[in-house]
Image (cartoon, rainbow, N blue to C red; front, side, top):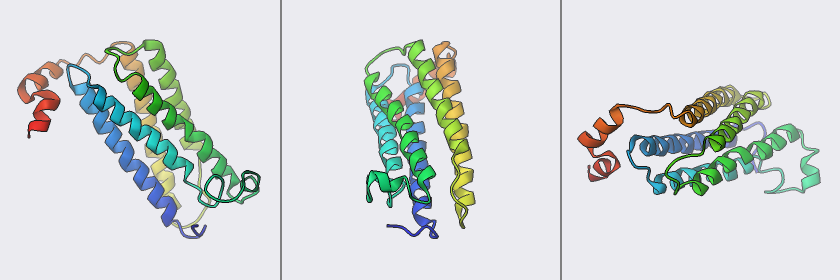
Length: 188
């Protein structure tokens, strides 16, 4: 268990989540830069999202499901944060399951993209509303929440743009022909 006065566990959780989200972003960018979508990239990103969701569930080691009972977790001084972590963990898990489920589809469904964009906006709102108790080092974590929220809003915008078929990047064909796309990257 971690000490409430020691923010190192919370910082570890936030930094690790940030690195995984960065990796997911790289995988998604590689997927979008290729002329033909590769299911392996989508599945890997989806597994990353599910992993982030499971990781968020573990954000409160003093509460349920890691220790303590479900009812005792409601009486903890940090029960608000505990509940937010559990509810907000459903968002990356939903994004991950969606990415895995649609990995083999050649084109995305616009209605599904709008639903995912809405989910990303809910995540951004949740991140902006989520505050950690005041103790040293939490200003960094609260700042990271703002960065994650901006990323979620960018994701929502990208999903909406994709639903509108607006990502017709002309350089995509050039990048594919000059660099070989993902195959060119793996050959390096």
